[in-house]
Amino acid sequence: MTKLTKKEIDQYKQKLLEEQARITGDVSSMEKQILNNSQRDSSGDLSGYSMHLADMGSDNFEREFTLDLMKKEQEILYEIQDAIERIENGTFGKCEMCGCDINKTRLKARAYARYCVECKEKLEKKNK
Ligand SMILES: [Zn+2]
Image (cartoon, rainbow, N blue to C red; front, side):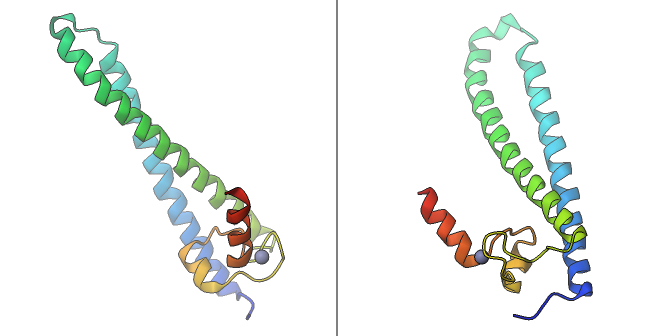
């Protein structure tokens, strides 16, 4: 496996920063969405009470779904931050389990990958 060049690492960093900005934007717009929904719920318009109840079910579902998505995005954000740190301290592109160089194809798809394909598969098997 060839080592990553400075230029390649810069490209990954760029990609990570872009993804970080995109996800941060996503998360904050989801936060706003949840906030808006909550405000609508607590506005307490009693004239349409039964309608309101019917609405609430789907709102809750939607909120749960958004929260779930937000959690996933926040996890990715954490992974991205970690990957950027690894770039700073020069361990980027190395598998945290076995220390080998992570396949470039894998890094291209997921610049924040922490493990090589083999270790990732081992981990997934263990978690099942
Ligand atoms: Zn590995």
